[in-house]
Image 1 (cartoon, one colour):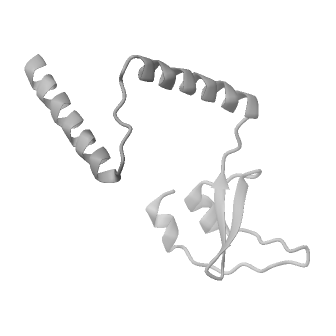
Image 2: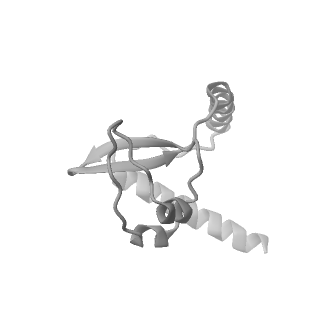
Length: 109
């Protein structure tokens, strides 16, 4: 979402069918098109609309399977850090890993 979009303010009216039209300056600033789906929530006394992209369930599950297989291959090959007892240990391991990667990259140059 472009940062400038948050500066647009205008009024909209709730119709008899409980519908609200999104004013043109807001639609254009956010690039909203007909048929856009929204997540609707109530937060701190405000109605919040968040544009959402729907994904085909079968495609999602297919990609999820690929990602899980890749993760399992990484685990089997030892390309993992952890498990950790706490966040401090996890952060220490990540910093050490990054330090080793940087040192390895400098040697390769």
